[in-house]
Amino acid sequence: MDSVKVAILGFGTVGSGIYEIISEQQERLEKVLGRPVEVAAVLVKDCSKERTIPSDVLVTDDFDDILRLSDLDAVFEAIVGVEPGYTYLSKAIDAGLHVVTANKELFAYRGLELKQRAEERGVNVRFEATVAGGVPIIGALCNLLRMNQIVKIEAILNGTSNYILTKMREEQVSFDQALSEAQRLGYAEADPTNDIEGFDALFKVVILAELLSGQKVDWDEVYRKGISHITAYDLAQANGRIKHIGRLVIDGDGIHADVRPISLTESHKLYPIEGVDNAIVVTGDLVGELVFQGPGAGKLPTASVMVEDFVDLFKSARKPVDIF
Ligand SMILES: NC(=O)C1=CN([C@@H]2O[C@H](COP(=O)(O)OP(=O)(O)OC[C@H]3O[C@@H](n4cnc5c(N)ncnc54)[C@H](OP(=O)(O)O)[C@@H]3O)[C@@H](O)[C@H]2O)C=CC1
Ligand SMILES: N[C@@H](CC=O)C(=O)O
Image 1 (cartoon, helix red, strand yellow):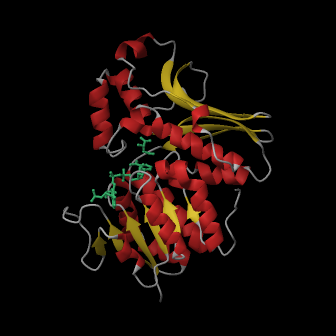
Image 2 (image 1 turned 90 degrees about the vertical axis):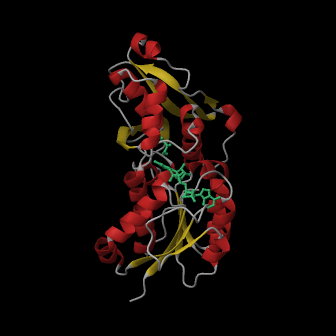
Image 3 (image 1 turned 180 degrees about the horizontal axis):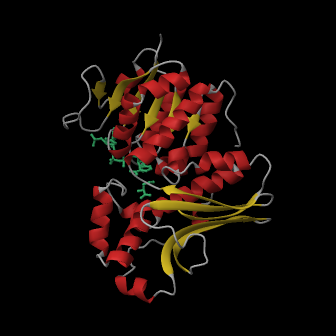
């Protein structure tokens, strides 16, 4: 029986999680897809690093090796930054491959272009993992957008920041200690600046705004502040709990968005969201308020939504909902 052949770009926290799920869940995959899934190749930056990858899987630092593979069906992308990811995914799409990405920085800057390119080539780009880690918020919004108008989103979108704020408040550890722990657990980016300065949440807000509007967002219009200036004293003195919040309000003038720490009182839906969890409060004009919550970062939660994206691509004969 022919297998579905995939390559994984990046083999850090997320890429190794994708590999782990595909190798350990073959039975489930075959049941749902009717075919086995084969990881044919893995792309990394440094081939000399020690990794537990079987010898029949090609490990390379040259993306052209991936394009030269015969019968490849899809690529998972879990590398860091806009480039080289954008170039690799553009080439993959041009070669007729489906793409599943976790790279929010790349998707915030160039996601609409990739979607457009994929549409022209008759393949799909899936990006559930770019927002809120293991929480399937993109799929939920796509379903809601068929009839509802989304009027507001308030969300905790960075697992690292929420983890740090929770640890500092509950266990009186220092900012640096909490950040080190978030890095050890695979929540923070290798360079955590984007997490603690609010850029990561900004990327996610931009992706959500573009999903809702189908248009490029003017980043200068989005206020951004992170959590790096917050002290134990601030947390103790706050009237409530300080949380890092991304907001989008959609009205007749368009989308108004910001990303900043806010002190929330107990009655707020995001007040009880602790640790690495993310949560998104979505208000639709027909449905009212909905809350989505779950692990916002980490190896298996993130890899899980990517494999779900992939399965959905290959399982459904129907065209995925295209809301752009
Ligand atoms: N960690 C998380 O919880 C989440 C992460 N993401 C996103 O997923 C992506 C991956 O994150 P994560 O796994 O944590 O990152 P890591 O830093 O753990 O891993 C990055 C991987 O990408 C490879 N890589 C980096 N640069 C290049 C390059 N130029 N060419 C080829 N390979 C390269 C690295 O290779 P090498 O091993 O040789 O160094 C490494 O294997 C990021 O975009 C991140 O924002 C999204 C949701 C959650
Ligand atoms: N570093 C990110 C990972 C997931 O997007 C976070 O902490 O939320």
